[in-house]
Image 1 (cartoon, helix red, strand yellow):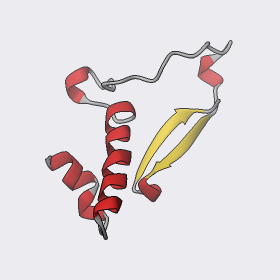
Image 2 (cartoon, helix red, strand yellow; image 1 turned 180 degrees about the vertical axis):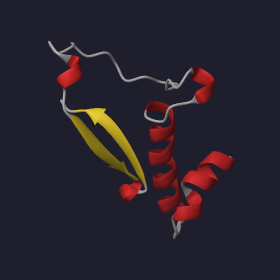
Image 3 (cartoon, helix red, strand yellow; image 1 turned 180 degrees about the horizontal axis):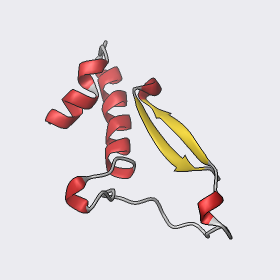
Length: 79
């Protein structure tokens, strides 16, 4: 509870129950698939499905993905 409050809800003005549901859904998606967890060796609870590797994974382009309108930023390999 504290993590969602400190990282998300303390920074967003919630205007309705529907808005709260959308914000929490987006945050939970980020928390379970994009946010590293120390207790898991900086892994994520639900890793993204494996894709076919490109010939040189070191040179793949990184793109920034904004979550919750830019409140949270994730870095991912570009497709």
